[in-house]
Length: 244
Image (tube, rainbow, N blue to C red; front, side):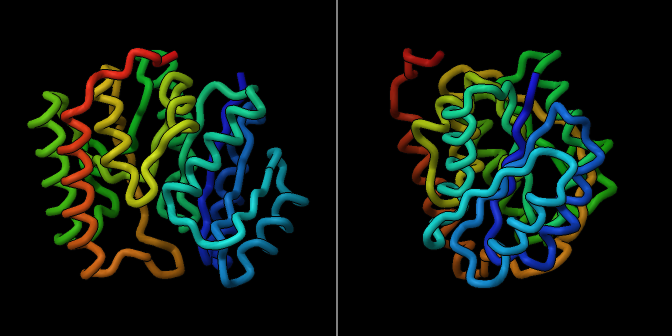
């Protein structure tokens, strides 16, 4: 049973080598995919160099221009669907925040507990000793967690986490449709609205190891409004019966 780790990367030439090196501890049931999201630095060249030296199979896809995190991650789901050899698809940031040794924990939760989407949470009790972002972002995370819980009845603690594992029922649908901007809370709500099983496991994350976050304060306001409206509109839609 093979699993695919999707690494969306935009201007991550400094952090990408360490991220890929950390992932080399995983068994050979895992393959890696770097999606170079139209980077303006040497991210694409670095990704190609890493593909030649990686112990694990490492694939590289270059997007022609910066499309955003949603498109980059969906590219990974489409890649998995076309190859049709993977069971789980794991999203893993290129900036060094996510712990490689926690990847099997997310996969194991999907396999043993039947989760369709498993999220690595910074806010479950045993994961509370790691980096948990700024107070302003934590406030936003709590807001989305409360909104999703209110509208769905499903309790989550870290709806914006970009460290997540999708089982086939989820990622095959994501390959067909996935939010373009800030997709984590929207895709999570889509799962719970459509009665997919969602769970979390505690993880201890690190601060960003390099580069600069694309989310500034003014974009955070846009983020809050857009995602909230998207979730509210999605709540009005009927359950999709064609899930396979």
